[in-house]
Length: 500
Image (cartoon, rainbow, N blue to C red; front, side):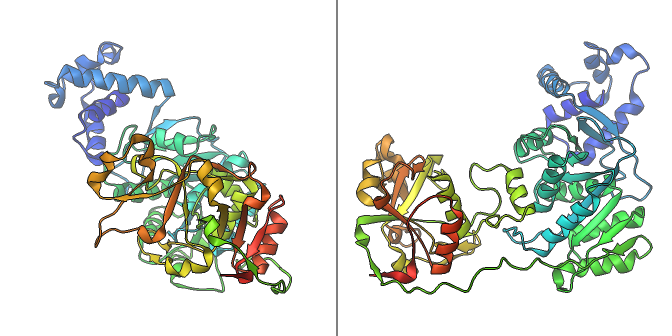
């Protein structure tokens, strides 16, 4: 009956999450004692007896029936919540909508918590090392993990539990346009064994900020043991953990580091507030030593002179999270296994391109989303003319890593210069050339200095003559490192050896 009530409220779309859960309780109190009222064909009659739905149009009931059919075909079930008096989730959610099989009752459910950091997750980050240690310490124990979507610590936890075949409870939240269950299945397409929980089975009913806090509160409520990695004092996550531990004492392991900072002030405060159940992790967590490299290679070769105008250049950037075409769990595995290219900085992106032999096209920021590979006529020795800090994207516009390919080769494959035009000019461009459009509004928006070319679709390096292209990096040391790990013969040129 609650699944049908959720479907009706989803079809109407007028109540927020707390109001819907309050209505669930009201419906249960008013439920008819006649079992036939809840049978197939009789449920609409029951809801017609409830004042709130007595005059609901038939189309709403028909739409709700479609939702019910979809959810039932997936196997969605309803689970009642039992939070202690005074708990922050006492009034909402009162019920959870579940998909999959719950862990065995003997399983100890753990969760790891970490305040949001910068865009990049690096294998040397202290919290990544701490999380890795938590996984190692519990690997042989009868534990499962509680996780969610949307943050690196949740992604790493989910992927590790999945890879190790550990029981997994996944608290799902909806995206702006997709229900929570579908968002979870899309976010982790290979995930087959998790028990997925959501506060509602449909699309968003609350503001995104509320979902984020409720997500963390549900993870904390379901978990029985906590691992606190690096928590800021006074933030939402600190308040979530503080409230949960006040309501219900749980064994809590708090990681300690010699590198104390504002990022870990919450750790110390939680340890002070809950000394009866919180303990410092037995060993101080420190970052691993950096990879050992030989002394920097000096550039002893004579300067190289290239006909720079004969080439077009593609500059690589850092890539937070998975690379294009890489699954989220493959990204997590690289980080947790400490693979050299897991940080996804600009040099790592270049390594990925050389290793794959492919430049992957992207439609991001391209009108109509047409996938292209972008090039520029500006050579690396003139790159300072273009490089700016982009505060919106939190990155440099260009970095001195990339590929140079002969212009005539790219032109033969379909590369063309960008057409810089005003908004009205887009409709005047032939459909086959619209991948070239770039908005140009003198005084407001101008990208002409980039002298951009675009090539539709992916670009394959393997089909090129070796003399038609080369890769470049700032130093001879980076060139050596790249050449040793790329797994293919290619010309990698340190910029220190180039002359104009």
